[in-house]
Each structure stands twice: as structure tokens, then as C-alpha cells.
Length: 175
Image 1 (cartoon, rainbow, N blue to C red):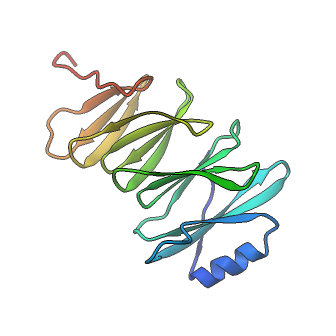
Image 2: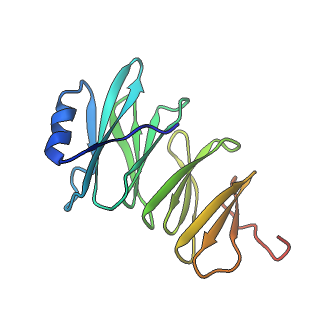
Image 3: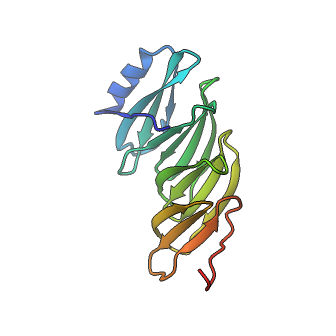
């Protein structure tokens, strides 16, 4: 389930907003060249927590919150940040090999696919990394196909086909 982002014109306005909230945290507060400022609200046992997100790359962050999970996944810049909603704390900040592109949810294997500029990482709803795949060049497109994902890579004629349960490249000349 995606969470709606709110954009702020300055870091000061974002921080003023967060100070008014009962529970809040900031992601990206230590970056050197902040370019944009966002926040989102996530429900925690009947109350809301507010997450401030500061980014230094073009494009807004993306937030994925599965109803069955106590985790919020935030894709921003070149990172995947995992927040525990119960404690309102960052559990992990994973550096991706390239710029974050998009989240896809894989209901068959109950994982979140983190698409980035140079590959894909699959994480469980609890936040553990299931598998990762690095592409030989920049990722141009992707498409879920049942229990597989097709990755289109720049300057490559054939797509890379990955098994979603393992991340193993199953593409061959017969596909």
C-alpha cells in the first residue's frame, strides 16, 4: 500500500511541521546538499507517526507500507530505508547500487521488489533481504510476469528474466 507524500518548500517548514506531531522521525537529515523535503503519515495502533524525508536527488521518494507489516519501506536517492512503525525508529538504511526507481509488491512470494538504476533487491515484509540482482548496465524497464520479472537493460537486445523466488536469471535461448 502506497502512502501519500506531502512536499515542503524548505527544511525549516518541514521541521516546524514535525515538531507539532506527537511521534516523528527524519530520514536524510544528515545529507550535505538537500534538494527537496517531504513528509508522510503512517498509522500506528490508532495514532499517526509522521516521517520527514530529505532528499538530494531529483524525483520524490516512494513509501510502501504493507498492512500486514510493522515496517515502512522508503525508497529515496540511492537508498532503501526501513522504518519500524512500532518503535518509530529506522531499522536499516540499505545503500543501493543505483538511484531508486520504484517499489513493486510480489504477492506470490510475499516480498517487496526494490527497483533501482542498476538492478533489483527483494525484501520480505519484515525487512530482511531475500535476494539481489545487479544488471550489467542501466535498467530501462521491468515487468512482472507471474512468478518472474523481466528486466530491460540499456544496449542489450534480450531481457533478463529473473525467478522471483530466488533472483536467479532463468533466461535462455528458448524463452
